[in-house]
Every structure is written in structure tokens, then in C-alpha cells.
Length: 297
Ligand SMILES: C[S@@+](CC[C@H](N)C(=O)[O-])C[C@H]1O[C@@H](n2cnc3c(N)ncnc32)[C@H](O)[C@@H]1O
Image (cartoon, rainbow, N blue to C red):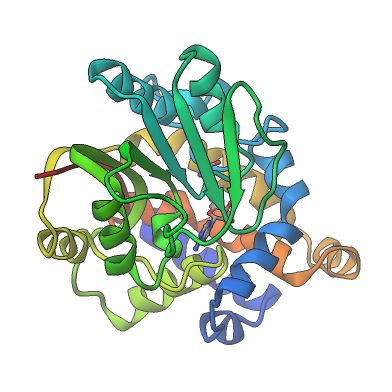
């Protein structure tokens, strides 16, 4: 069976477990995103790591290791060390673990995180946290950051122009904006692919995955230059495959699913749909995972 056939089989199975039409038609507001992450704290800890990282591991040897969760963070750190960088902002900093890791290894660095749904311990290793929406960075003066980064949350924005505009204003000249995220590989999707993509995105509280082409068109509207672009799609596959296997245990028993729906909120269980389909959607060239480094001109 090839990955297309497996996808079809999985979709049929998911339809038996969940009201997929309802999920696809969900309105993903900021309140919905906040509720999704607050309800899913335990699931993220169990499925990712208790250390609090909420993003994909990037593996270079074809095997997933917990330390692969640090690959993206280390790439950001390399950029910090390669330039005279003193002020950094992390958008959607989640549990604050990315920025506090960087802060602990770079004394003297001023690093702030902003996140909608979390409020981790403040001032850990010189890292400061603000609870807020990354569409509104007005608390920070213009031209005050050397580098801004965001790992797997740009996709949550339904007003990406606003985020790019805010970041452009808050960065100093030649400042960097580093983005790790998932995109739709193709610009035009068949109805079937659109439905699958929507099912995956909505089950992760993402309205829709924009295409790489749309992303580049958006970036062009601002005086940003893409100075590095890396396709890490194959490198997130080992992590995504791990998710597929774990979620297969869930989807192996309808009774088990029924019992869990009595214990856990639906919004949390729905995430298993994305976990089940992610690796197949990468293999089928539906979704991809990229890093972009934008420089303010
Ligand atoms: C997949 S998690 C990634 C967290 C973190 N970047 C990491 O690598 O562990 C997505 C995060 O984006 C945050 N988020 C989503 N929309 C946001 C917004 N408009 N403003 C601030 N944070 C937001 C969520 O609260 C959540 O913590």
C-alpha cells in the first residue's frame, strides 16, 4: 500500500471516530486557540516532552531523539552568535523553554517571549515573559530588536500581514526575523486535498496552512529579504512518524476512543487527527516544513 492509499484508509477511520465536517467548519478565533492550548497542556507534555517544547524535532540521521527538539532553537542561537545581537523577541514562546535555553547559554542577552495562552515562570535565566497576542507588539518601542523568531505559530495567525508589519517595525535595520513553520506545498489543491489539509490544520487550532507561494508573496509586501530558506520536511518526518504510531494506538479501538471522550475534552482529542496524518501529508507532498530567515532592508 502506498502513502496515498494509507491516507485514504486513515481518513475513513478518522471519519468513524470524529465529526470531521464540524471540525473542518470550526471558527478558529484567538479564544479558541487559547482554549486549545490550555486544554492540551498534558497531551503536549506526554506526546512531545515534559520539558515543555511544543514543536517538531528536526532530525538529521533519520531517527527521532528528544535532543532533536533543540535543532531549531540552536539554529536561532547560531544566528544570535554570528551577529552583534543584544535584544531578542520570541513570538509564541509557549512554555518559555526555547528562549530560556538560549538565555542560559548567552549571559547578558536581553530576551523576551510573548504568548497568548501561557504564563510560565518569569525571569528564568534572564528570560522575561509577557502574556499577549503577537499581532499587537505596541508594548515594545520601534527598532528595538536585533532578532525576532517564531517556531510553529506563524500558521496560527489569520492576519500574517499584521505580524510581518509589526516585526518589521520592531526590528532594527538589518534585523532578522526567523520563522519555522508548516505550509501547504502546492498553491492549488484538489477538493479532496483541501479537505484533508483543513482537517489537519483545524485539529491543531490552525485556520489553514498557507502555501509557500503565498508566504513569499506576503513577504514581498514588506522590505524584507529572504536570506535563508531551508526545507526541513524530510527532517521532521521521524518525529511525525512517531506521532503516527502513537495515534494509531488510539485509532485502533473505538471503545477506547469513547472512554477517552468521557475523560478528556474533544478539543484535545481532535489533535490526534493531525498526529495521525502529518507524516503521510508530508510524504504525499501536501504539507511541508520550512525555515525562513528574513532580513530587514
Ligand atoms: C505549537 S505551540 C509552539 C510554542 C513554542 N513556539 C515552542 O516552540 O514550543 C504554538 C504557540 O503559539 C501560541 N500562539 C498562537 N497564537 C498566538 C498569538 N496570536 N499570539 C501569541 N501567541 C500565540 C500558542 O499559545 C502556543 O503556545
